[in-house]
Length: 403
Image (tube, rainbow, N blue to C red; front, side, top):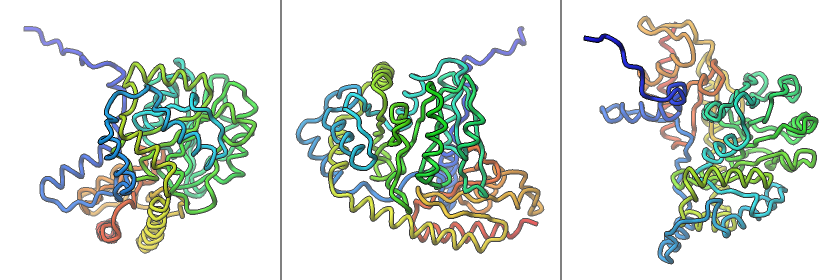
């Protein structure tokens, strides 16, 4: 009888791909809850608010009016016209509707971009900490992620000088988010201008700016890097409806960029998924041009929670936090706990730290290692104040056992 071990039938593409840590931790939280544990899940980047009523009513109306058929691959004309207005109104970005592509979430938008831009071996400079899927999307497109790290002392910002030093003849793009997932930091207008000035010196390098958290900004008015004249034609702006409108399950993202890239993204999407769903697009077009009061009320609630969580965490020895200016995350440095033990478990790194919180405190958070920052963890405060207070209290109790 042969003892030869059969090789995996799966492709190397799948075998080499990392699982999304945010989704992994959310699944672990659900499993523990199913076993009867009282788990507080602070792992997912999802607003706990419901979609505003006027947007849901627009979707219901669209269904009643028969908007249930296939849509154009790059999005309905109505929605792209509304996005065009939004880009000009909020971002000083001038796109015609043929430069705009609507996708099934901003994650698909990013995938379309890098499948369109990259050849094998092309490099993408990613500013870290970064959203978990950035590097995997680049690798899936056969590109090479070049990670530029920053830490809490830098307010999690990578200076333009480091971007300049990382550019090679294989560099194809610079990718970042502001406001940031996972840190909540926001690049200032001057900092964005410095990055634009670096990229402008290299005519074959593009900027991919993820602005999905645009409306959850606690400081100055949001600035889009694509509004600077010297990179206006080489910036692809990514946005969507999930965060600012609490529309995560609606799965709608979009880009604005050069015509040739929009055409390429539409070509790829046409073979992958075709157009996004019809009645969601109808409601999204309405949302962009309707009253923004519910969005700003959500932002204000997030700001209140941010201040509360920072105050509570500050009372726990060994947890170092900054003050994020956007999104709904705290990204503390917890390296002071590395090497400590409760007699049963020793914390060696951020992964151990998050596993410890899950198993001992039944609080789900995400290791910073998934975001390119292995001294940290991400806590989402898109949860009720009651849950946030209880979660931080549990964290403090279990960490006090580590010596």
